[in-house]
Structure formats: C-alpha cells, structure tokens
Image (cartoon, rainbow, N blue to C red; front, side, top):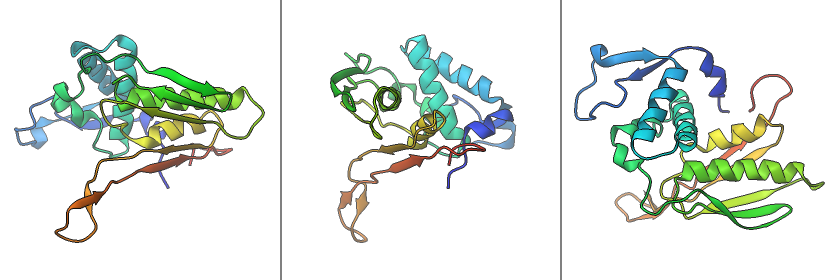
Length: 201
C-alpha cells in the first residue's frame, strides 16, 4: 500500500541542502526546511536554467518533488548533477506516433521519461473518457531518461476516477545468482485505485 504524496503536501518538507555539491558531507547545519511549493519552485527554476521551457520545468519539478515526499530518492537528488537533467541534443516534445480510439503510441523524441509518462497517462485518461470501452492503453518509447516514480502517474489517473496501471522496463541490474552477471531488470509496476473517501490507493 502506498501513501499518497499529495496528502503530504500540506506540511513543510525537510530537504537536505538543495542543489549542493554531493561531495560535501551533510550535517545538521546543512539541513534546511522548505515548503513543498518552495522545493518545486527552486527545482523548476533550476530546470529552466539548464534549458527547459517553463511548462516542462514545472512538470518535472512537480514529479521529482512528489517522489521526494514519498522517500523515493530519484527526485530532487538528480539536481545535484544538473547535466543529467538537461535536454538531450535534438530533443523535442513527445508526439503521438499512431493511435486508435482506445490506444496510442507516444514517441518521446528523446524527452525525459517523466514528460513522456505524464503525456501517456493524460492521453490514456482522455481516450478512456471519449469511448464506451472499459480500457485505454498508451505506451511511450524513445526517452532520454527514466520515467521516475511510477506511482505519480498512477495517482494522477486515480485522482481522475480511473484505475491507473504503469509499467516500465529497465536495463539489466540484477544477477540471477550471487556473483553472477546482471541479467534481470527491476521492471517496476505501479497501480493507482480511486477510493470514495480519501486519497487513491
């Protein structure tokens, strides 16, 4: 069971030395407390400085802050090395490559996985609402980075009244046996289920 990141947005968030060099040791004196809005604003500003437009910077900042709020350390920590988050040469906004009334393929055009995934989640919701069928499936490919925390996209769909399911593949990280060569990916999966009362499950 996942705790909704949105439910946590009401209180200040401790964030250790935002946008500092990772080589320095973090001490109590280096810890600052900022609100979620401040964390998102600083992150969006940093994203704009490395080349993102205001819309994409704000969206990525929202996704990374939500991950951080859940204790998922693939969020704001990425800003320690901004070059990892800079637009890829020749990157463009995601586009719909082909579609049917209930499905679509999104070409991310080397944009970050976060932008492709939110585009895919929103398109799936749009398709679900525009037809009588019980399901819509949208996939994305050709990203320049990982998609980040999958729970963000599932919660986004669940808050709109749909059951959201997000899947991702990954490179080989895990060995089948101790000392063996990595052959398995983490292949994450997430679900978001709306509830009548309270945040999505």
